[in-house]
Image (cartoon, rainbow, N blue to C red; front, top):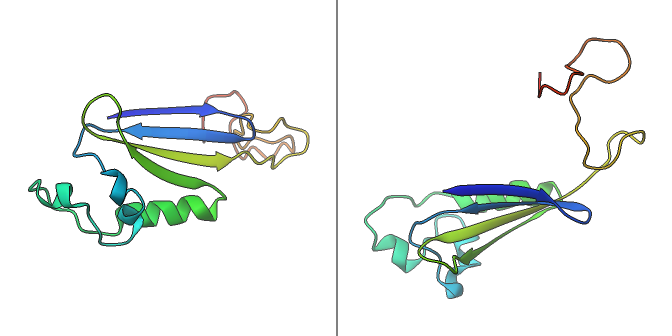
Length: 118
């Protein structure tokens, strides 16, 4: 599995690439329906008939984003792509810049050294 993320023009793009069964083009929307699996996955002998992709797509949608899937062009597997809009929660900060929770109020609520999430 490969995971990558990059900022774009007003959004973040996150891609997850796997080397599994892939998702045939005719099922690339249907796999986001709860409890639906593409025929090639059902024949593969691996269990998994839950709401997984549908739940993820709904969570992404609630954040103003999209989730899509396509077959990998280079070998077996699928590529899931999440696009999430950048939102500037602090007008004094650049959109998409780091937010370490520290703020400037002196409340000590988080790190301000860029060391990650408290």
